[in-house]
Length: 347
Image (cartoon, rainbow, N blue to C red; front, side):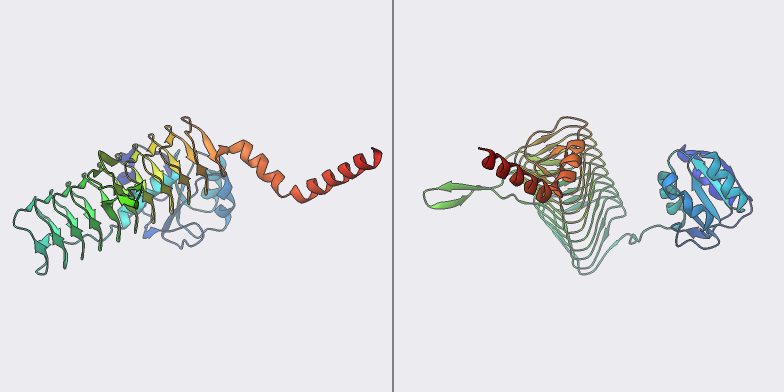
């Protein structure tokens, strides 16, 4: 692809601001700054990575609107594209050179399909898929090998369920969703009642609702509740090994990283970010736009817009000060002992 063609195809996204370089420069693909070779397009997100400008072998760069970086790129003979969102524009560029595998429409001869199931046009079913009663698949749905769809499941248009997913009864999956390999949606929540005879199961009669544009990572699970629903809001993204407990409600555009666990009844607002291994306690409410750093333990409600860290969760700035003091505890303890000893001698 010529540089001029690249610019033309990236322009409709509205992120590109200006560009410079040989229009006939051949762009062969995309790469990181460190690994790029001649013919590659790479990106610099901020000043933090400016030092790579003098060493990268890329032929073209996506840059922030920084005149110094642009002049440095031109001094090395590199083509450049300027935007306020370099990483987002680079994501668009990747899509021009790479499209993930998606099987062609068709039903594998080993698929097991209940007679009451209904399909839209251009559905793809892989080997050993099992489709239960009253399942409905929308148009252009892809179901990977060994996927099991229990009775009453619905899957919206263009969604892709990768190999070895298990989708339990009555689960609703919206349009343009991606469910990665090994995920389990709609299984019974951890609902037990303590009685005189010990633990007694409370039947989980609710369901799971996955709204449009949601992506769920490998080996993640979203449990159904005893009553009502567990809901994942539109365009939210779940990483691998995420546990969503029964009755949780996750807002729109949330990012939930690997090994996060939500206990039952948790509510997340819109635009919440939970970094790796965050734990959220039973029925906690997390407001819109909250960010929780890695390994944060949330045991109470968090107001909208807060940034929290630590266990239990604290304001991030307060946690940083506390963390700085933590490594000085032996020194502080020794100083306290010396003060106590002097006080005891003086008394």
